[in-house]
Image (cartoon, rainbow, N blue to C red; front, side, top):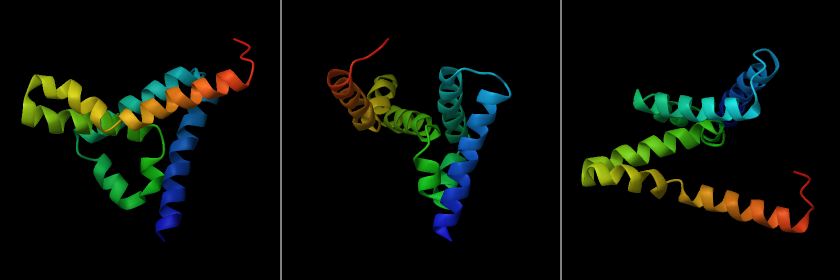
Amino acid sequence: MTFLWAFLVGGGICVIGQLLLDVAKLTPAHVMTSFVVAGAVLDAFDLYDNLIEFAGGGATVPITSFGHSLLHGSMKQAEEHGIIGVAVGMFELTSAGIASAILFGFIVAVIFKPKG
């Protein structure tokens, strides 16, 4: 049952994104930014952790989880270290993902010929 809920929740998030692209005519950058902000807002109201408990990978894989991680880490470190903890906590939980995106983007750009 866990796999079914993960599939349905993750797929539902993707359907929302595709509808925003097709119907609302938003650019991919707008949709991605909106999803990151939506994940942070859901975490601010303490809803995203419940969604992760319910859907597992269906809630942790999409980009909304990145917004959740940014806010979650910032709030945790802010409690311990004050205002400087906001910046420290923001990158503590997300540094591996950011570093991987930069590294793999560089590798792909070196191997293939970018057209942009």
